Length: 138
Picture 1: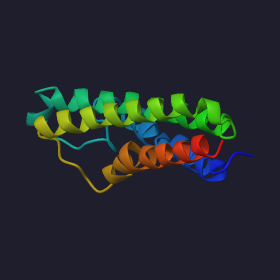
Picture 2 (picture 1 turned 135 degrees about the horizontal axis):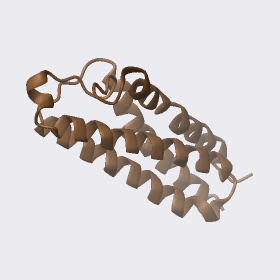
Picture 3 (picture 1 turned 90 degrees about the vertical axis):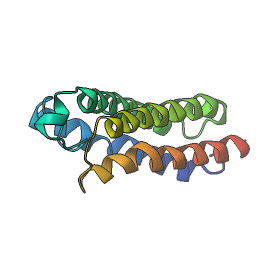
Picture 4 (picture 1 turned 180 degrees about the vertical axis):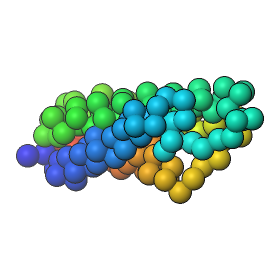
């Protein structure tokens, strides 16, 4: 077992579980409202920016689930940590783009959206830290 792999595996599990909320909320409420990602009024939704941001956040959530599963599968293999780091950075960048577009479109974040922010930024950051630890513990 590689050094740091237990921490990495736990964070990978979180990375696969947390975004499930975002994906489920889209299918429960419908793609039009995107509850759980952003809340917006009829005026803001007519611009399409917030709707676009929500779709990008959905892509980020699905990718995050995929990356989390890949991380859990390869937690003991230091050779695979480079690709895990790259994928986590991609997840963070995609989510950051969605947040910037939502902000420019006038999206209003509600308290439930903080779950998405945690899964979009904090968990991938810890995922990267864990991957670096596993890679260094070769």
